[in-house]
Image 1 (cartoon, protein in one colour):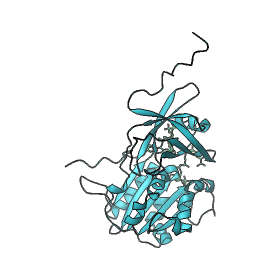
Image 2 (cartoon, rainbow, N blue to C red):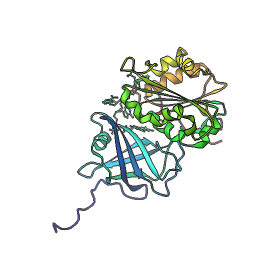
Image 3 (cartoon, protein in one colour):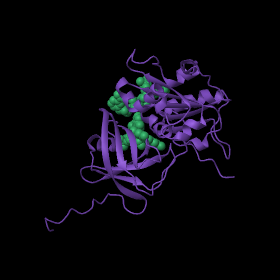
Image 4 (tube, protein in one colour):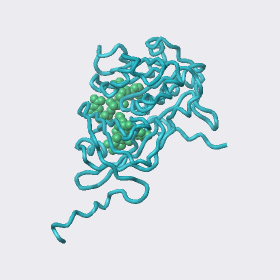
Length: 286
Ligand SMILES: Cc1cc2nc3c(=O)[nH]c(=O)nc-3n(C[C@H](O)[C@H](O)[C@H](O)COP(=O)(O)OP(=O)(O)OC[C@H]3O[C@@H](n4cnc5c(N)ncnc54)[C@H](O)[C@@H]3O)c2cc1C
Ligand SMILES: NC(=O)c1ccc[n+]([C@@H]2O[C@H](COP(=O)([O-])OP(=O)(O)OC[C@H]3O[C@@H](n4cnc5c(N)ncnc54)[C@H](OP(=O)(O)O)[C@@H]3O)[C@@H](O)[C@H]2O)c1
């Protein structure tokens, strides 16, 4: 083999029409286990705020691993943002740990998911309940003026283990601090929850517990009832399972057939303790 010849493409690189090769533009490391990734966007890539992409990164040997990843940027933006957690021993996580601007990233041509506002029934109040990186699809929705003109009140609840992880939701806190920077007229309340640093936030217990005993409603000064509230939940599947149980008992329902939902869920991994779908089933066509 000619030593001057360029290296051949790694055999595991995704090929064919399903995916496009993009470039990492920026990496921001919020903590040792949380980073944001900005990636170039294929001009033909279309998505709805709340969708996820399939993101692939290569290791040093060129082997690409692909995982679902919620898109944290808005559809009108020219790039794609992702908010990623690094889990110990995770295959994508090990690539995210060393990923740098200029690296290649592979993005499926299609976007996926049902955690989107078109699937939500009319109502004045939007609740966004997230754990960890589950805030990502909500960041995308909150960039869109349509979200802010459709609802009167928006409440964002983000539960993280440690206070430094809240930095990833700075944009949400800023909308609350200075409503003039918000893309539309709705009033937003941000309820940060730090669960492993007593005193870091006013709210410190897990989301389902505070939903059930009325703490979240009190903190937002807004009742949570099926007549007015629309609840989106994203992140830890055990959290989602509990939220679903609590809201179902109050008459909330997921989307069915042509009927939009009063509660929608996206789970980030399989919950071995319960029978729940990773994704809501698509509303069947009539
Ligand atoms: C629809 C969908 C959207 C997703 N969006 C995101 C996203 O926006 N950001 C993101 O970081 N991950 C997201 N994930 C999870 C992501 O696909 C990977 O699982 C994650 O990047 C870790 O990949 P891995 O190969 O390192 O480990 P994996 O082998 O995929 O996961 C190992 C374990 O790590 C834990 N874990 C995985 N993801 C998370 C997470 N986000 N927060 C806390 N614990 C986790 C779970 O216990 C999981 O079983 C999403 C998953 C789904 C199904
Ligand atoms: N966050 C970190 O500091 C950190 C550091 C190193 C590695 N990691 C890796 O990242 C992964 C976890 O990341 P993460 O902290 O973003 O996700 P997470 O474990 O899902 O925790 C995020 C938030 O969800 C809460 N939560 C967990 N289970 C819940 C349930 N059943 N019901 C309601 N709320 C629940 C947590 O509260 P509790 O605190 O009460 O659990 C925390 O506030 C782990 O696999 C770990 O290896 C995280």
